[in-house]
Amino acid sequence: MKRNLTPTIQIAGRSIGPKHPPYVIAELSANHNGDLGTALRIIDVAKKAGADAVKLQTYRPDTITLDSTSPDFMIRGGLWDGKSLYELYQWAHMPWDWHKPLFEHARRQEITIFSSPFDFSAVDLLEDLNAPAYKIASFEAVDLPLIKYAASTKKPLVISTGMASKDEIAEAIDAARSAGCRELAILHCVSGYPALAEHYNLRTIGNMIDHFGVVVGLSDHTIDNTTAVASVALGASIIEKHVTLDRKGGGPDDSFSLEPDGLVALTTEARRCWSALGDVTYQLQESEAPNQKFRRSLYIVKSIAAGEEFSPENVRSVRPGYGLAPKHYHALIGRVASRDFAAGEPVPRDILIVGDSAE
Image (tube, rainbow, N blue to C red; front, side, top):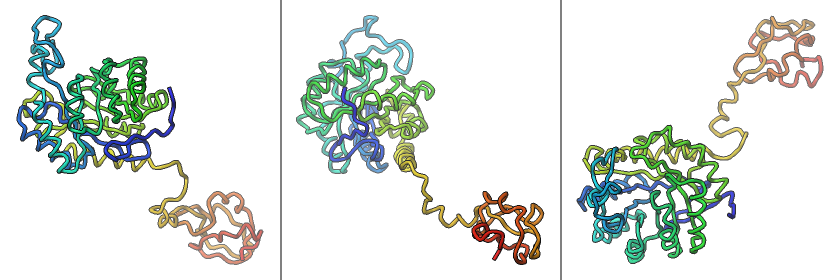
């Protein structure tokens, strides 16, 4: 697998990678709650919050599962306990005839929009809408034929890796590459709804960057922004987070999604975190320069007459920093003053250069 120490991809002209601010994706998911108007408002919220993109999920219940209530198809435990998979996806899916108005609205708002396809027909629909990229959901990361079909469009591809082993991630990447994908990102993810922060093991992000050599981000299902912002410090270039108008809205994904204020905080804090990373440098920063004078230096604390020695009783390291640097303290002690020094006077910085003379 080819390694690239500073990989970069582009989605709709926006560069994404370690040298660029984190790319924030507002995941609309099922938070439309069956109302097109709600979906449109979430796009508006994403734009206002400063998100880079809004993402949909493109499937129908019959393209993602079977209409069956046999034990294999029933959900036990968690948010959706007691529902069949078909019932869940019937409830949660985005009607296909909404896609065009949503894409058009996002483009009017000048925010990127793309989607997660869950079968070949979904890719075809999204191609008709000229989607600029594709996202493969964690549960589909093992569906190599789907990955290849999406990759064959030659569009940028983002793959979530929740539940995937290292070998399975490598297989997904190889499938995408073999089908023609040249701009690829993977998202570290925990497929719990909600997920616990302590399950995220964010140090994995650095290993993913080193091992797979692609852009790496985070798909975050925790209930606040701590994990997402921390991931930026560890190298995440993409942050994906579910967004809702109301966490108490009663929809399938509302309870673990960000409300509008939370999305504003995420975009602000993630980019501030990235900005704080900067470069490796030991140079004085502009904001520090005025404060150099407040560093410590050597001052006369008791008057010294010419011919007296500098001693711990008459010289101390104090603020401000106009005198000789404290590192020269021991070299100064015991030397003889060649002139009078008044208490409160800085020890001249060149006193050691001119020898024992304190001119």
